[in-house]
Image: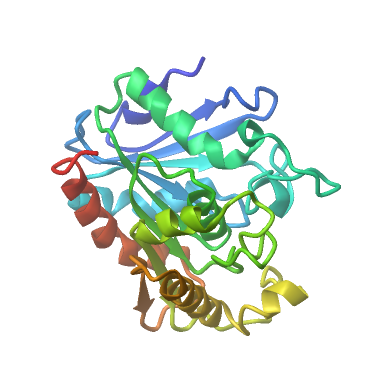
Length: 284
């Protein structure tokens, strides 16, 4: 078993190999950014990297932010050789190669909850809730994870510059909607009550890059990542109105920023820090 205390051994950057019990033959790497004044009462924020599986870069984006935010950042890095392609990461390993559903315990969306439980057991944190941030492919991972119900201990969540979305629409099949997932309208009501923040760089409009999703189902969501983020929010508000309930989701435009994990992290930090520090004053 990994010695999780390594993650908080020193202020700044720390790294640790770690294996989730659900995937004993698929190792991950945990990369942390520890603030100088860390204690077990410091809020915990999980950060999810993009398609390059560059957890070290995403951890480094937060090194200059964690002291002011007063949060412990942990980046679970999903190596491409252990968790290959969008199926294992963006889409959470929810189905096999033939499209057949896998048991919920095999979805990679459960990794974060199990890791947080281990951090609590190890005494790294006494917090009851955590925050989560994902950019690009990590933004896809985060919002799908939350949509499928892995949010019981999530106090604050930001999805930023995702390439595609699981639209909160039961008539559109997963991974581009929430159809064929077993969710119903009561589940949608619970989802719309969760305070999700969607962040969109106003300059995230380049469609020529290798990793921009161009499949037909993706293009129906919008011509650019920026447009898709707004379509996601509009769909949520329309569905919530149809159900006769408010939608707690918000969208934040980050002016002049393109597909940039570092600048989006900086924009997200004060939002997440404020929510995380308030969370323990109002425990569930």
